[in-house]
Image: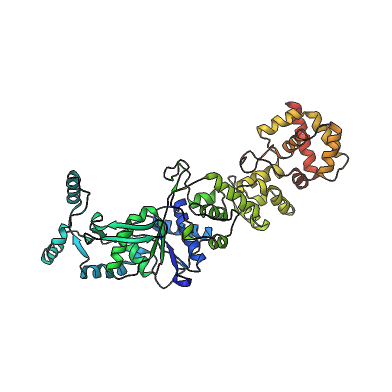
Length: 490
């Protein structure tokens, strides 16, 4: 399976927004296709979709593009195997339904839900696993036609042979064996004419040329059913790789309570696509390198043999780590565009606060203390609009005392050109040094002693020398005067 013969796919059902588990499946398939110079296919499985599926389909396409997971074949892009929405593939499924009926691998079932439930209860009461008995398989052609003519609703079931097994090699979980007597005859077409997941998913993988199906381990039990369908139709079988699920930090299923967020929420929260991709690529997959990688870099080192069998635990701290790495390594112009593109709660943008001639200096000053665009907006407001002291800064200023800041103002009279010269003069004038010197100055100039919002990531604020150069003499003087007045009232 090399070159263009290698094809993976992402086949979401548009019933809601893409969440972390969905993103990981999409990313793994994308990286595998990219690593093998193959094809990454997007298929929208909307036969079961709830109302509003068109909106969710558009949203998931936008999310994938934003993450850089652009598909080679699928909606909008096109390809030789369309249409790529299952709701438009009815004629394809009808052809294979008819072929299964002709070959005796499928039959119509007229059992009502009430009858099926009674059968299940009786089997369980007798200590047997609940399996469909196959009684409608015994109906004659005449009986079937009579019921159809009478308008009786019918599903279509796949006839599973008994006393045999289905075996396949899972690329993650190894050799798998399922006994057919444990499967039972299953529905492949509902009474309303729509195909079941087992059927449409398997048919589309085969006819669209998918060679490797990478999906969650919750689909493992579906695989023998799909293999039986494809074998009965003489269609090619893909390989399968069932990946472990993502769980919360406590080991429970990932949910909103345990940290799961949609791509939309991550984007609105200010996360960068590169940070998300670097974190998720390591959720259940091992990389030798632990540095930030581009999508091409992630793909080059991605392999099925590096996928884990154990559940992957979601860790917010790790996501923040990769966000920090992405921010630190972003080119200055790209970082400014990202920071400035966000519209903040008051409706403002960064360009409203940051003077055009100071954009570069501002980005370099705050990039080590910015996790999201909102953080940069807060820093810009404090640096260029007016300082807002946090409680700890007020305490530090109060302890330093008014005399300290009056001395600092006097040192400015000497027109010291840079922060090092100024701080040296102030040290000599006051006899204060180390943290006792620099913390009051940081509090006065920035309104904060350290980056209190992200202390695990950035325990210290921007370098004072950069702050000094960014503010300029007039702003520095005003802030030292404000700090002296505040200290005098503490």
